[in-house]
Length: 418
Image (cartoon, rainbow, N blue to C red; front, side, top):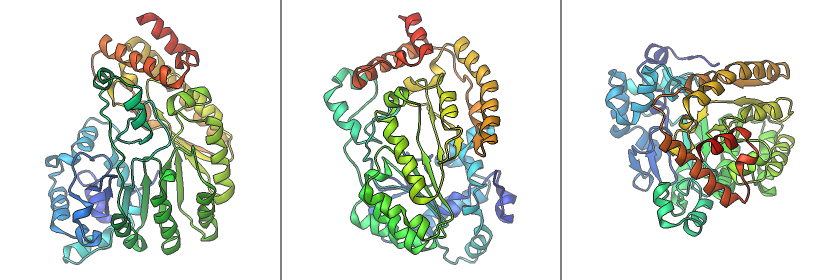
């Protein structure tokens, strides 16, 4: 675990988030926000920002920094989620961010420049070029995945779209001017995080990453990808990770199951994804991290993920931190309390044992936050459980096979409720 290597940040880490003092997040629709946790609170639209560096040093951004410095972070709606989780003793994004070397290494120097009203460069940028994606995850929809759009239009009745809260969203993407604004700030970044949609499915990500690897190979790169489809030209571009001696290039692969469970949850090919991860390792020389999203669909399955990847050469570690809470019908919290708690208690023994085996193989398993976050926070609702099962049946129709045939516990629950 990283520690805060900034005196100014260390003094304020309980009431201040480093991200507004380091950079910003840009969404596929051009909305600029403080971070990925607050997409519903845009500060401004990229089309209305001529220059990102100037905007970063503007009064609009300073408003948030001043509030945090004055211990008024609780008054900022964009920060309420982290603040509430922190006060509840749960893992929160702010606490994690404040340990990142990429945002703390220049924090003290930039703090002094800020006090002198002098401009600072953007150190951190997270962006999403578009919602273009090549998978239809059972936990997702057309807002984040363009591939869901046609399915929601053609395979859902109007009533189903209402029941499952699935309005059809159009393809959204940054334009050429937006891309150029991002390219202009690449040279001074300490951290560049690229999300989707699916990053490798959008050519603009290739353009930006190709430029960043040339002008700023010392940057820390993080790519969140499903690794379902990676073109030969993309792999050729990724050769720069090795040839440009990029030390900090982190790829997080979203893997929510093994075999047919993976195929059902993500709407892709597990075998093809594994092959692409192997090729990525051969091309770049960099291992990757496996990052599952825990939902009701794989709550009884994810030790199989741990077992499968425990000894894979291309894997650096496995990160269990992401629990799907929305839409509500994909949440594992919909399970009956007896079944949920029995499974959670079993995981408290299973996961640490898996961690010991993974560590013996020279890899890392991060799991503390998942055990803390997997707890029932609301009364059981049979209506919510039925909704979860209705969604599984709809997904069974879309996939052409039943998830319950591959997860016996879900089959038993389905039979119990039917």
